[in-house]
Figure 1: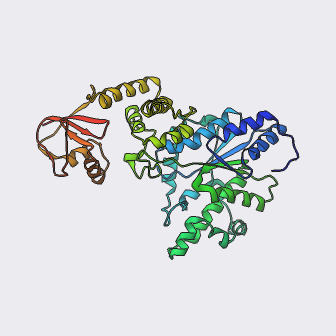
Figure 2 (figure 1 turned 60 degrees about the vertical axis):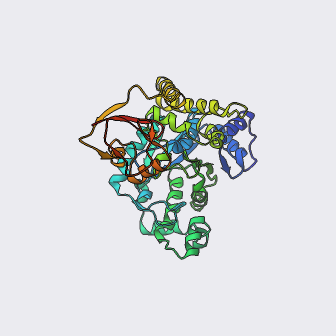
Figure 3 (figure 1 turned 90 degrees about the vertical axis):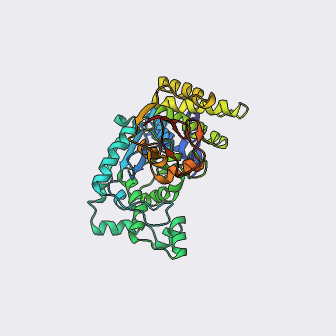
Length: 397
């Protein structure tokens, strides 16, 4: 950050608000305040970049952390630039991975991107965003141009990245193509003239590489990197991911499931969820149950609407706190006696036999109010099956 301009107080305050829960590299919130002031002086919006490699078709609350930040920039009049990774997704981002990540086909990228934007519209004004695809410039680069891009860094620098360093030390393979992923993502910042790039904390190396590559291509004012924390799933242990559906809160979850999953998070996760997923402040002096209900209601209302949030909260009080059974549970007819695991899968209460077994082992499966303790349990009569805290069905033989 240079000191050639005077920064007004309002831009310092805007930067402090935008930095809530985030890390800005370099120079912290004052670096962002400088960018805001400079853009104001030049009578232009900042160009705020987010790269999307649509590896899966659905989004979860972990994705909303960066989306909420994009919306804040939009509300201040800045230009959000969404880059679909048509080229980078076909390489596969190795960030945080212990092995080469599978690449996607062009068709998979297109289908997943369509679903992404439909779900992103819950948070970001897609109509006001600039949406592009990095295949538009990366696929047309000549071999000589790709070599020029490659000269912007060194193998030694690439091997300072944690995941590459660990794999190299362990003797596990690293494809040369993987070295190009951070370079390709960084070149996107050249192509769209990014002022700021957003990403998770696992993207630190890639986002800072964008500054190096902009310098390599003659930029005088390099992008800032805004890093946002990754949030844990409902178990409080691993990063929220569709790899662990039982701990993931998806945009596509029903209001009742979203509310119920939020009520199941460990108490120690609440301050982080409040900070990154809402505009509310966590009150450590309140009863933890009340604070969790306030959190669950607020987030459910954001994505499902007030009426759905009211209904979800009322059902939670009835079913979980008062030990009742929902009024609107579905009835399912079975041809004959069946294993409980097969029924859980048939009802989509679980997505795999492994998940069903874990649910049983954790005491989360009940039939007519009695815990199912064996994977060999046979449902041989009419009754109510409960899978987890929120899923019920009346079984009719």
